[in-house]
Image 1 (cartoon, rainbow, N blue to C red):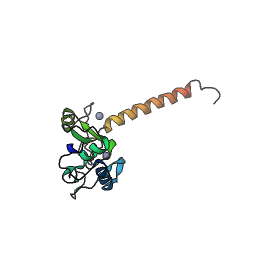
Image 2: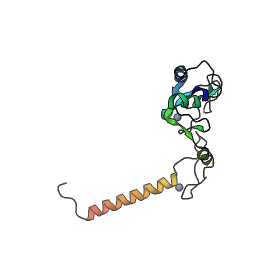
Image 3: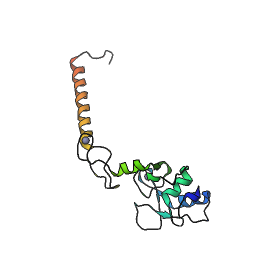
Image 4: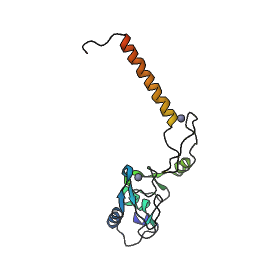
Length: 155
Ligand SMILES: [Zn+2]
Ligand SMILES: [Zn+2]
C-alpha cells in the first residue's frame, strides 16, 4: 500500500510511482537497477518522490506485501539499487546478525573486506585455494591410476 511509504508525495498512484522509479533508474553492474535520488552521493539509500526511501517505494510497487515493521535490504549490498529481485525484507534478528559478521571464516582464516560494500566477502580465498588443491590432487591421482591401470577399451 502506498500509504505505507513514509514521506511519499501524495499525488502518486501505484502506476505513476512505478513509471517514476523506472525513469530515474539505470541498469548497473550485476543486474542492479540504480536509482538517482536528490543527493549527489551514490552507493547510499536514496530519497525520491517527496521524502520517500527509493528502495522502500520500489519494494511496495514492484515486489508487494511490504511489512512496515521490517527493514528492506538489498541482497546485492548496493544501497541505491531498486532491482525488485535484489530487494528483500529481513527480520530484525537477521539484520542484526548480518551486522555482527564474524571476522574469520569457519576454518579460522581472517576474512577480507569487500571495498564495494564495506562488508566481509562471503567466500574465503584460503579455503577456496585449499579446496582447489585437493581437487587437483584427486585429479592427478585418477590420471596416474588410469595410466598404470587398464584403460577403457575402444578409446
Ligand atoms: Zn542490486
Ligand atoms: Zn577459510
